[in-house]
Image (cartoon, rainbow, N blue to C red; front, side, top):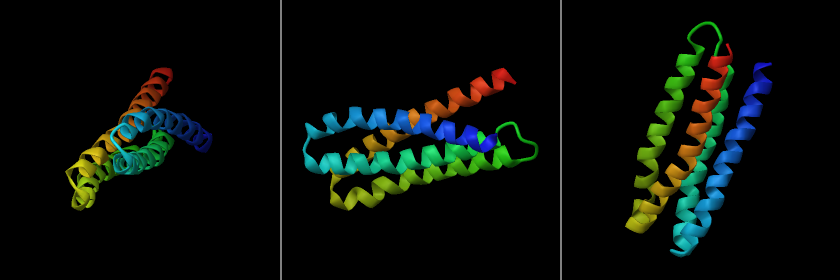
Length: 127
């Protein structure tokens, strides 16, 4: 049961992140090729972390023990590290690349985080 719930969440979260990417690419394309590459890199990093971490979190929600809190802490820490490390890794390619990466990070983070919050809130209300 929990694994099916996590997979269903991952599909919804991935779809929301993909919609954000589809909105991001035309916007980034107007700035040029390198901006598209760096913004998609930022999006990919946080979208993958958001979908995988969110699925883990959803699978632990409502279980006994500290599994949910451990998953929550690890997911928060991983996202924080990505938000700090990714722009610094891209910075040698210029300020424009770093800004594009930051925009991509938010484009991957916001939809997956919103899906996660809504999912957990709804499952808590049902319980």
